[in-house]
Image (tube, rainbow, N blue to C red; front, top):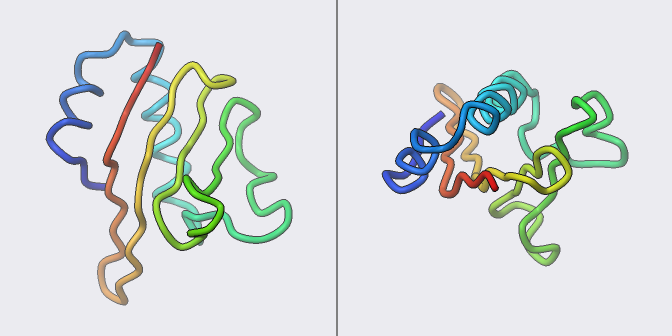
Amino acid sequence: MDWTKQARHDFQNMPAEGSDLIMSARAELITAEDPYFRGIDADASLPHWMTVRPLASTSPGGAHIVDLAGGRGWLIYTFMRHHADPQIVVTEAFWA
């Protein structure tokens, strides 16, 4: 998983409660067969504090958002499927 400079900075400066949940969400994303969790109930196996959805419903293959702890925080990311090296890029990390 890669991070934009701003997302990395925001992550590094958030409280431990937020960064711990983001690291747990990161583990779920990088081990998922499909990090976009497409399909009906595709994200049913995720922890109760984490939901994944497209950032824009008109772009299901675009950026996605991981809502954390009922909206207290989130990650916005894109996924690029490459045969040898799939890549997830976090463009925004937030914790309130």
